[in-house]
Image 1: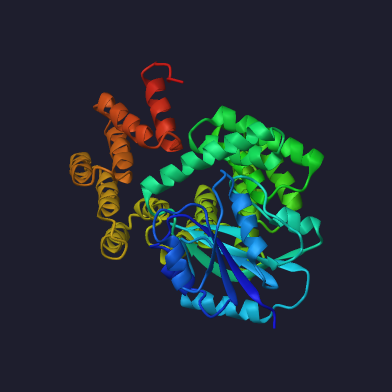
Image 2: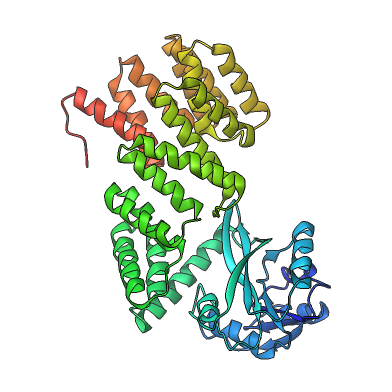
Length: 468
């Protein structure tokens, strides 16, 4: 029987350890924990729970700390967790089955990691010991490239681990600052490392530094083409999304196709390709790609960071295409499928409302509003549907008053502000108020294209130049 060593690094994780180690108790043959300088009872708690505990000084290097765990592990296989990882009963059973099937084969296993609210990431979490493979990088450390270079085949498992480390906003901010500092430190040491360039570009993108991020992501892909290995799908996806946000659809499509040449089963890239085809005006190809993506997601061959969200997004986009082609029945069918699985998918409800109002089906709109209140817990969005029904009846005053009161009661809600701008534009007697409403929407969501287009049209009507 193959022995499995659980390997962990930890610092000040006294409160997290019981839930983490409890999820694997009885599944592994030993637990190795390397403490990097705790000031709480992490070491004592880990020992009480059955772990062998070792100390190592923190050197601003996650890979070095993880490699220290390997030095103490005696099992045939290494399985690693972070202290804020959680394994529920269903995935404990899947993990037990995976461990029971281990032999002496040269394979490693990727395991899904669910980061709230819905982001799914794949990491190599289980691999043979004594291969000589080691983690690399001060932060966002990886062992997969070293395993592959040593002839280890990487397979995907069905196990899902939940990562609870992103629920505390203050903690997330501190982690981001720490990670950025370590990335900058490693970039200074290795300026042409494509992986570090990629992660640094991602970090700058998240801070709104698009120009800086674009240069880093472009350089990263250039270096991968020279030094290898093939970059992951997420590398191509990050660059595609950055190009799209800046309105550069042609280079985005080129990068997307390059990514799919290496990762043909990546659902997120396939979805982006369909989006880009639609943006470029190739509606027929976009429809075909969306239909193919949905079929592939249902059959199972495509992977995605969030399969359910991707399926809903693809269905919504397909419904939008059908609506533009006056295929109302097909659009309604897909939008109904979206809201059946995701009652909080507001864009689909808005699409359905457009259809029903155009067909005079006001009772359907009211039923949808009641459902949003009762099942989805979205009273502000329910008010938007009711306001739109009143607007369809040319009852501008009632629609405007309802939305104004909704914004007062739900000041953080987005859709009532969008709807108010639309009502004021349709009413037409107070363009200054309409402009303020649209600017309010764009302040909260600068990339919301309909508001930007409506504002540009309003400026044209007034003979004014749109601001940059």
